[in-house]
Length: 569
Image (cartoon, rainbow, N blue to C red; front, side):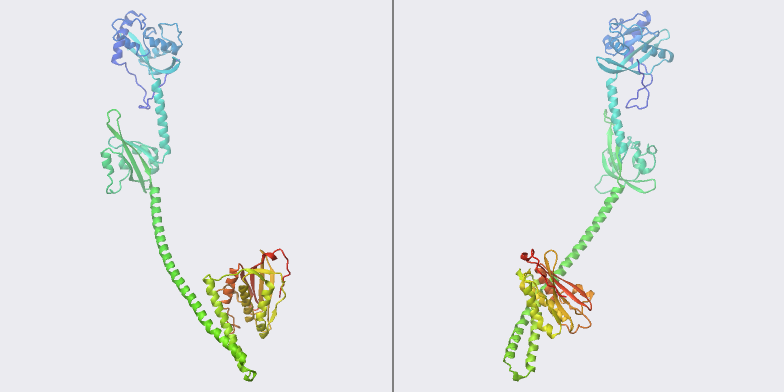
């Protein structure tokens, strides 16, 4: 069965092949056949060509060809036509000559006779086990006296395969153009646009057809020339490629859009003649704005870093000066403390010697004076010792000898050292018994110093008739809490955070002028506690008293035991 298809070539899309006569060479070959057929009407095969036919072998290599009369009688055909007819029209294999036109050709003949022409049509046939496609061309030769129909079939199988590959490639290219954010363009030799992709509408707001025929550079403007960068117009005149050249366009709102324009000249592959340019346009407006913002942000960051570095340098200088001042102060305290302690020890020694040698006949006033000297000197020694402890702690030169310390002995020793003062101040001292097997991990001297300091402070801030006591409680995480409590004046809530600061003194209306000290005792006590792995905390209520709690780690041998722990209230 014959299939008639209107052909659209890759190079001439949408154009239908028009009627055309065979070339002069083919006509020269066919004319003797036409004349011979018209004269005798006899059928002739390729093996019995009439005389006068030039180049008879050429007709055999022409492809399937035939000559026929208008009434459908085949007057001549070559061997290729015979093979073709067998495959395409199911003629029997024993047919050696085709004398009558097959039904498919009858339709062709009818059209030629009625219209004078027949559009090229495709016919598929399997020859040698391979499916092939042929394009048939048929012509009517009418001299007025006689008419002949002739034609041939061209094998276009490879051409169709090439056409399909080109179509697939064209489809891929179209998909790429549609999917890319760039707009694609092509010009003629005068740089007038011949093709523009639809993506340009996103920039100009106009369809691509509106730009056809315009010079590509008329779509926008070029920025001012940059030294060392070739001018784009000169590159186009020299037919040289260019890439990512800045091009300023306006969108439909009048806003500037920055475009990177790239182009490549293309030439005729046959003669090398220049045909135009092909290229792309990329909207880089947002990218350039982002780059500009990034540069601005980086500059601001660099300025901030420079200012911060300058500030850090100033702070380092300040820190060095402060450290130097602190070191100088520490050195001064250490030196002064040592210088004061030496004469004070001498005063205390000679005072005690004088007191022992004075007889009762000297009266009561002189021993009383000597007692005052000893008390004042002892107080000064305690202050100096606290200053020295502060210096050692800040210089990290305090060594802790952490051993097992019995809590009962520790409490007895400290209570005995303040009993006389408590009695003189008419303050009740509550010291309940403590289990002898209760131990903590501590430096014995430091622990005694802490408790003496806390008890002394409690006596100092408790009026006559008040109470000071010790309370011991075993807490969580193997800690033992030794609390020194009093019924004194208490500490204002706004000063409780600062009581452990160096040189801080509690201020109150009733005791501001009567309390002694320079405000470093609690600072030293807490630092010593922390060096032993413990701490000191405070609970206080103004007018009702305070509770200073020393937390120390319990000795391992007492962890599994449940000793009786004394408490006082």
